[in-house]
Length: 396
Image 1: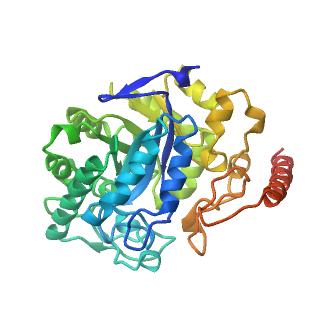
Image 2: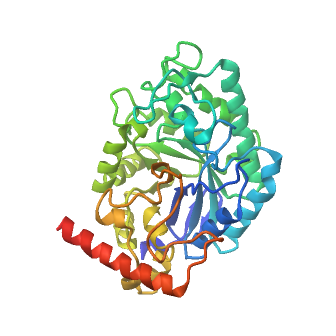
């Protein structure tokens, strides 16, 4: 199996080519620090034969999270929790990645309790809150906060630090003409729109830290003035010149969520990763609605990616890889949303009234303070099988 082959990312050798894509479970303490549930969730993934486990959407600024329970990075008080998290992942043989972001103009004060800021005035239609344009002083502060977060991630033992330059978050917002209407040194020309990213990277003076950097980039924003795989050519050349370890390609912003999920379902994201591979010799991780090892194998065989990332499939069954490698595929529990789009959103906490992260399958991880009896699991399994069959009948 191609997925079992080792691969080198930067100076780090990965035991196989399967990645758990970056994910936030919205279970940090309100000060942004790591909780027992966060350690439990990601270490549970790591013990199931994954080559790399990615901790997603960790905010670098007080106002950078999407809810009051977003995980944060950059302050000294976070170090012990971050070290515990990275070591718990690595103790199971997986490499650890942490993804840094700032929610920017896609923030929601009702969820985070913080002001919403961005490069320019902008309103996400489904949220309805106008972002306040950042001042030059505020931008430079955020640049420093990204740098602080990167250094803390390194000091906490993470193997890679992925900058989120996609999905319409802050760095992406500066790069895109769709959301950046500034006329100062941070707007207008491509050079100016790149300034925030370049300043962040230039602040990383330690080459050992710099070699851990990676990026999540966009293949298509689905907007006229947004970014796409052709428009990020100069971005990739710049990141390559800074020896980034790998790239993950994705698509869409909050405003274009409908197009995002339609294209993900079609497997279009894998075509973006194939196109990205034409632009760079740096390893590329393909992802987006990969539901099985077989699909990942096909992507590797067709050279559309050097590795592949899975998310919802691993939420539904964290043992998916272990079961696949041990010829127990019939025991894998599928994600309901993979059978029918929109059938289940329980893992997408921003769609829940109480902002909770959950999954209906009996194989899914459960919070450490939630006790599930064997009888309840049997009941859950029966419900799950009936639900799956019902969805299959509907989609025939």
